Image (cartoon, rainbow, N blue to C red; front, side):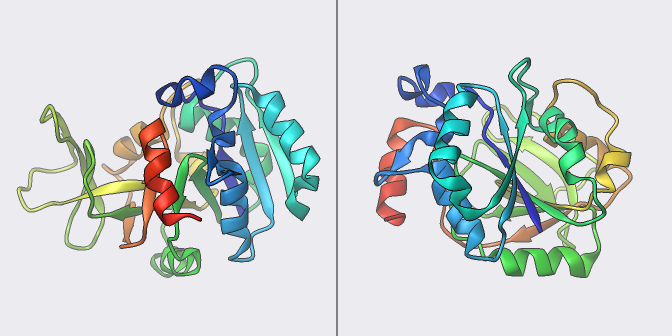
Length: 237
């Protein structure tokens, strides 16, 4: 199985580090996020990666070269000309991923110990084209699921803004964990082009398609701010 690691973002919340470096190379206990996530996925037998780059992308390429790609096959999806966000980045990397096999997507700035084997097994059992790792934790935005864990909405907890596929007061709010399992049939379903968020596309597709959540209670830290580096260092040695 291949994994696409999103490492292109500007990481503005991680300033001042990201004034001179990509967020994927921010260190937790001395080890860059990108290295940690490559090692994490390797522990589940994944050695085939696509990494998208934009912000100080040359530093990521040099880092991988210096470490012999961590003995993995790594392809670079180079968004140097324009940062395309998660949806545009996925489409831009299509040539590396559209080979008839399921693949993973993971944000470079997420650290977790989700059991990827269980996640992939669940994805294959329900035969969806998208499965999203989610958990019951504090978050300013929540995805809303029905009793069958099918995506039916989105909620901004702070403003009350929401998008619903149907009206229902009983939806289960869960926070997205930044890890997706995808069937390449998604490339036939996505309608947007250019720069866009893949979550926007999921919220459109939930009207006609079943997108399931995989609920986990694993450790998960979004290493998006300097204080979250300190939080991550408690769990990831």
